[in-house]
Amino acid sequence: MSSVSIAHKPVQTGIPAILVLLLATGAGLGAATLYYAQPMLGVLGSEFQATPGVIGLVPTLTQLGYALGILLLAPLGDRYDRRRIILGKAVALTTALLAAAAAPSLGVLLAASLAIGLAATLAQDIVPAMATLAPDAHRGKMVGTVMTGLLLGILLSRVVSGWVAEQWGWRTMFVAAATSIALLGVAVWYRLPRFVPTTTMRYGALLGSLVTLWRRHAELRRAAVAQGLLSVGFSAFWSTLAVMLHAAPFHLGSSAAGAFGLAGAAGALAAPLAGRMADRKGPERVIRIGAVLVAAAFLAMALGTDQLWLIAVGAVVFDLGAQAALIAHQSIVYSIEPAARSRLNAVLFVGMFTGMSSGAFLGSVVLGQWGWIGVCILAMGFALAALAVRLRWLF
Image (tube, rainbow, N blue to C red; front, top):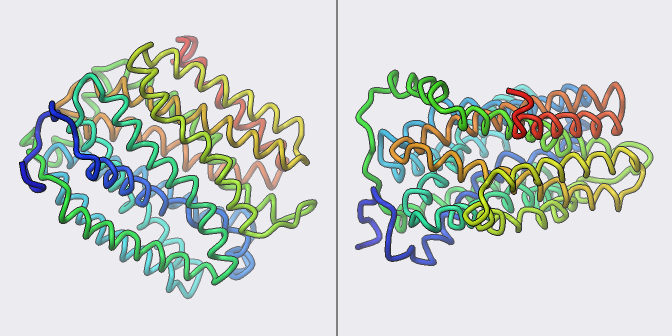
């Protein structure tokens, strides 16, 4: 097959390494755009003279845009060629990032943040693409590989943006991000195969089928709710970390906040391992272990809120737990109805990023009212709720 051959079944003879690398890199670059602003929130708050609660709307709107984009746009991957969808979103995302870079006011930046979230859903078109291309027996491992790229993009984005913002300013970071997405679009144009649609539903029926899938599959409901609960703490931590470090007693800049992404990246590297474990041992065990790790990490951080080393270790542990649970949840969801993978993926990630946007909002509110210890307790409580869902005690 040529590089533009049509794909509609899992490839039985393997996937070219260059294509795996492209998908992993593309997922990472797309998802990274959701988080570039987080280490810069202290700087952005000072420049636009905004309170922590107001500047917290930047990540909140980005996450909300992502959730809306998954709900309204991701299901189109079952109806149209995913390659064309990814290319269109790359153009839109590049434009939104450039708008953020040129924002003259906080209002414009907030609007651009919402648009970035909507267009960044190209990452959620890439993951089902890999699930379609991968052989059945290795789907967990291959999706885990792409998710490693996605998760490293999320976590390392904070390292990069914190450093770039401190050296050259926050606007430069948004320009660099736009450039990376434009280059990704070119690579996708040349390398990604076309995909045959798996349904001919009209748009309204396609969206309506999300409700049908939700009602039909208890495992889908359980996965979306549990991952959403885990995501509240994940987002609350990363959305408030820069503001917390910027204030007393630490008084650290955006590069220090971004450097914590290196700690989180260590956890993300476990994604392929989690995928292999889900393939061999079953995903339920992986999810429960992941939820326990998240809760334990935030408990430790709540007991040592003034210890930077403990916060760094906690970031490794809770990221490991959250990402392992996500890979295992995807393994469950993608096996439900192969012809509806984009829509199943949409339901899972709507749940996840509803949790993300809620976590960004709640984290900012809790930080202002009860400080960092309140954020840690909030995150621990939601992780325990996720564990209760997987144990069938809730939902």
